[in-house]
Each structure stands twice: as C-alpha cells, then as structure tokens.
Amino acid sequence: MPRKELKHPHQVIDWLQDWGSRLQEPASMILIGSAGLLWHIARIGRDDPLPENSMDADPVTDSDAVAELAYDALIGSEFERVHGWHVNLMPNMVLDQLPAGWRERSHTAAYGHLTVIVPAPDDLLAPKLRRNEPRDQQHAALAREMGLI
Image (cartoon, rainbow, N blue to C red; front, side, top):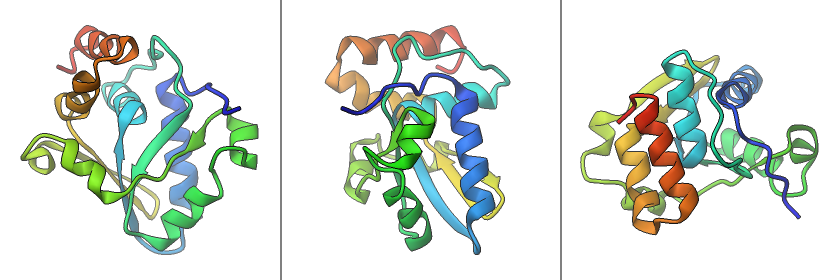
C-alpha cells in the first residue's frame, strides 16, 4: 500500500535539489498536482503543510534522464521507503486539463541541471476543482489562505 507522507513544501524542494544535483546534463520537468502547490508555498517562503498528506509528486517530462529517476521512485521503491511518498510520472496529455494559456502564467526555477516549470496556482487548482473532492477543496482553501490565489 502506498505511503502518504508528502505534506511540507521543504520535502518538494529537497527532492528537486537532489534530482538536479544527480542529473549529468540539463533537463526539465513540469510539476503539477499537490507537489506543485507545495512548491508555490515554498516559493513565497513558507513551509505550511497540506491539510491532507499526499502520496505522490506528479511530474511531466520529455527527458529520459528525469524519467529514469522517476521510474526509480515509483510505488514500492526504495525512494518511497525512505521518503514516505513516491513519484508518479504523468503523460503529457494531462497538461490538456490545465486552462488555456497556463504556460504563460507558469513559474520556472532551476535546481542544478533540473529546470522545473510549475503552472500558476489557479491553473494547478482548476483540474482539482473540477474533480471537487474534499481534499481538492482543502487545497484551494490553503492556496487562498497563503495568498496564492
């Protein structure tokens, strides 16, 4: 059973810094879902936790090197055993669920050789609010509380 211990922004930043230092050449990924929201909370200098823990981070990438790191961090991996959460590599088509123009509103940061693109908080939350589960509503409330939306 997957563990569900992704809760704090620093966990996402630590993970991105680790992967950026392990890559041997420039690569990029787009970070969506709860991990993207946590990234934005870290971006404003906060480490406030999610109201409900997440079990995974959801990157999208065309990089073979990033995909290889992600495959080593799947459910049941050593990564999950150590960190308490896993990486769920997503297909490019999930980006179609984001609102039009999301790329122009996205934020970018570099961690070593890794460039991370994160859609704006409103864009990250749009698919969650369409799903409209209680945890998604809680994530939107947290984003409002943090002044992200």
